Image (cartoon, rainbow, N blue to C red; front, side, top):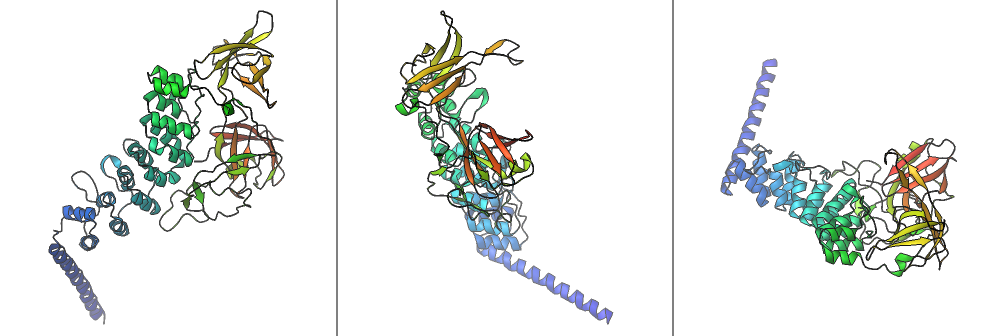
Length: 504
């Protein structure tokens, strides 16, 4: 019996081989009839032309899927560039790597982004393409889309590249890509981000003379009164670069709203517009009054089969509307944790807001009569410097000098030389509200505030420095500091601190 079984096996194997050879021969004949030879060059041509049937026949011929044309492009690159989604799907199903590398380490997603093919970008991302990969020139798909000014592609990639948004905004500003400014900021890029030397996106655009980009940044909330490490505003940066038209624009007198102190009350809360990235059906979402529906970072490694268990696929809100957030002060939040680190891991910082004033304390000194005087610099117009005493009103404003507290600091940074860190308190004579200004730091009309969200509960609050809250298990915390890129919390009983970075 054993010899019989062996013979039957040999016969079956032979039949399979004959059948395979027959299918290959048939496939070869059909390809020739369609005008193709069974060569890598024709395989690549079929991919670029979107000839799905020919691709199927090439695959049956065991074509090397990794072959490239003379320029280094694979079939997947050519299909993606040619907007051949059906061909891309077939090649991926056949086993091609979605991150196949072309010239300079370019992936199909990068190529589609550079070419402005937003529908292909969307498709590849849904199939699990990694948006944050970079080519040999250190450029990601997002940067390539920004460089080419393809707003629709930026819109598709931004939800998957949250930690690259600030870099992309700086790049867009420096290259004058005004088309993508509003898209980047609406997805969470910060107009407060700084480049080398303390340069803001507005300063970079002003320096290069990109008027449309300057206008877009101003519309997105850029601060024209911010100063770089040299103490220059964007207007002064523009003037130094002989961009006088832009300097004149940025040096315009402030309007009445910019010369008002308006600290929101604890009861009033603040108005906030969420980034356009939204999460669908997040578990543990709180009631609509406190839940934030628009702040979840797309899960890394999401594929066509869906995101990791328990996480939502990123979607885009078509028209995000402002919502009023309560301040966290005095609240008990749902986040639980035995340590600050555990609490910090559950909380996410979603945004930061500050309202600048167009004035800055340049320095303080003793007056001739013995009292303290302050030199106030106007951060617009001719950048006039005005000497004031307690009781004086700063010209062209309604701010009265309430108190000047002169202080000097000695540190290693200044080689032991005294540094003026004096504090000048001003009062809005119409509202009665007061603010303190520190030497060489542009003033603000209110305390900066940020948005803090419990990822486990969905509760969202506005937070500012000095506020106190409790966690669900009774631990008391203080918001020690609020900065453009992070919030620092400290546990009251132990003093342990945790830093919550701006969500990526």
